[in-house]
Image (cartoon, rainbow, N blue to C red; front, side, top):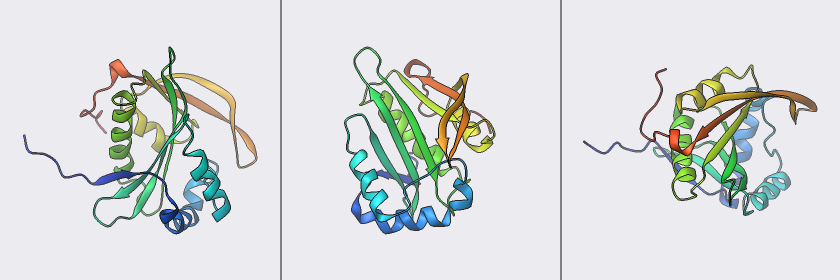
Length: 180
């Protein structure tokens, strides 16, 4: 079977990408409104870089394999090892790349790392119930809806409800997608 050409690549967040990141945040304000609050100043970006180096977090920038454009961000947060071996995913795309399936490819790579080299057992994604695109994304990757968390996360000055989606290592199928 021929090897497919990668359309995205993962890189670690760096100072080199600060300008690209802040431009992406600015261009994506309407897309992100009420869903996520990414760093929007140089100071906030550098604080994010410091957090991304903690032992309990793995962070990735998603870049286009074609033009090196910054597609989005994936954070593996609250990593707990030992008997738990679990983490939470956070992710967002930037305009003009949102809605093209690129984040699905990137998340497939990150989930593969989580269940492979990191040897996690469980990943969670907490998603606001009205965020249909994000729900469809995790469903295609095999996540299962497990519950509802009232007033789970404060975004844009408001506590927001979230659905809790999870994927277990034994249910992960790295090369399979659910139908669209």
